[in-house]
Length: 288
Image (cartoon, rainbow, N blue to C red; front, top):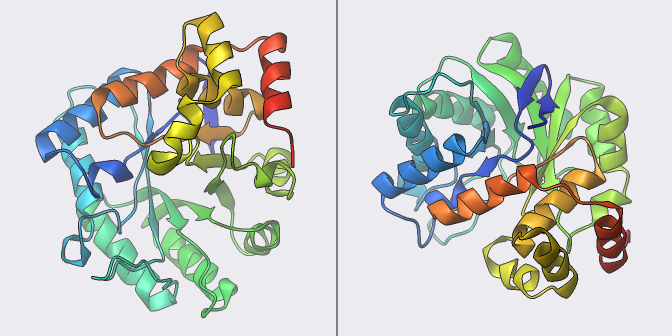
């Protein structure tokens, strides 16, 4: 299996988006641990999480603690990269307002360290720029955390090309996590993905099969289904394989709350699309 790079770390080309294991309709914790183990057993070596992935504001860090438990209970010594995020809050009304103020990010990072049970976070990502906080201040505190040895690498999420370039002038940025899927293709043309390719920055694609609410669009898409039939693959696997084939820096992180979903996503790592497949899919999902 080919690998992809995040900084100096090799990871499997598809990672696990762990959010569904801690929000609405989540499985019980024992089953959630089994889902994580199944994903790792199938070859995934990247898990993406965040402090706000939790049932409610009284349980911040739920997803991080769940991942820590799953890794403790796993016998394999294979290196797993855990990427978490800070910069949003989780309110009781279900909203997730921005808060990328330096003091909040420092507290959030400390809480994530405790939840994950580690002394240094592999990849700490700014969840989103905060319009109320100068971007340079948010980036500056991430660099402070890195220099203090609490964060190994810095990533960004939900950023524009301008913000990415601004951050790069201040700190080493190793990853960008933005939305990318067959139906969300803006980053193919806005310059973010091209910049990541030119700079060797990993592009972590969230929502690669359009998330819980959009999965029906993938399942019903005729080009995805036709290509899948030729390969004995699901339309979700084809969508993931198409993203992988579009760029060498893309690492999709599909979510899963069931073992079968995690295994279906992992199988896409072994699906090779040919020129006919790519021509058909590129025509169905043209660059905007």
